[in-house]
Length: 193
Image (cartoon, rainbow, N blue to C red; front, side):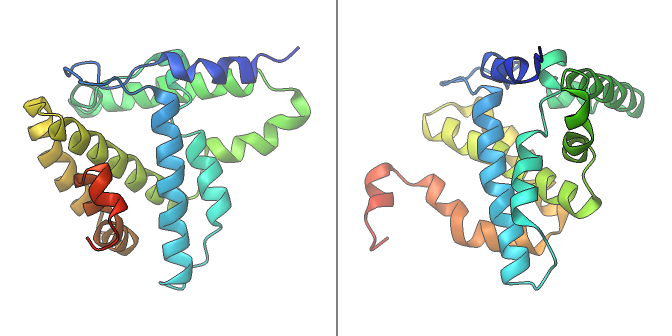
């Protein structure tokens, strides 16, 4: 009996942004799906518009697994996770152990296939990191739209982190899709906007 998928189903029980007052909680499962959507879009942009050799489907599936270690570790708030290099290195080791624990729950003949999702190549990892940051920015935008100024500084620092990634795919995505998140549903439905 394998517990792998039963453990994955627990992603919906892990709330993100634990140090922040939220108008609406975001769970790990929701976040992961959004990151997979965005990572897929970034990969398609890279392939179709920038001529890069990218497997967008693999990027999307890898993104689905990018935070699964948090089922075991919980969500570590960014200010703590990146407080200094010692904490960052220790947390990376903890994440690696958690990922190994998860993959060990798979039947032995499936482990090698799944291990590729936990150790992505550099290009895939960069796109997923960018998608993760864009997802965080979207959360900030949504909270600020609801009047929650608790996310104002997080929005600024997340925008800076996205800019520092210096990825053309991100610039294209943001230019074409990000402004829509600032609109209301009625404004999004109005094709004249």
